[in-house]
Length: 235
Image 1 (cartoon, rainbow, N blue to C red):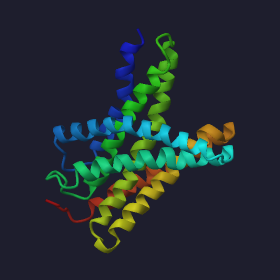
Image 2 (spheres, helix red, strand yellow):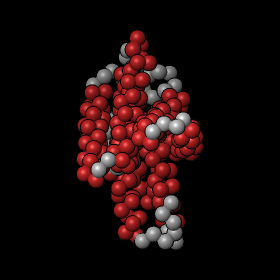
Image 3 (spheres, rainbow, N blue to C red):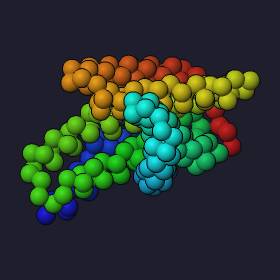
Image 4 (cartoon, one colour):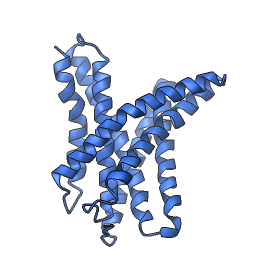
């Protein structure tokens, strides 16, 4: 029965990326806190999906052109909703927690929440295949989600985490920096979704690949830069 293996295959991509990014933390977080934020990230995928469907329904009522409806949906109905809801998890559950004690934690917890979010997405995508999909299809979908959507979630949210971290050191620009981080991640997330759905076959590969490379470089640079900043404690 395929349904029995969808859960571990849905979780696997996020666990691999989680292990990779946890290694970047010189002062490891508690397992309880990691699991808590990961779980909250998973929970937010459900209201996000409902909100996305509601926004699509409202957009369809406006009588806009098909391409404009698609653009608005991918960028605002999906990307902004998902990046915003992951940010809210960290803002409400992490920022005032004693374990948030160094700049890199902002990026790390954003990535943890994002990987939790991606986990439920992965499981739902696998379940949509039905109970008779061949093993090769399951492996292909899991692998594609690992290098694609799951990685994108981690990188886009990690980008927000960087701007969230530096906003701590700039009270005058605090809100502006957070909005900038959300804007950048939303635009790139939306462009990724739009490209894999609407562009030509060549660009369906080139554009998402370029977005992932740019974000991966930025997130890696962000971790290295934040490690040089003075540790903080918001408690």
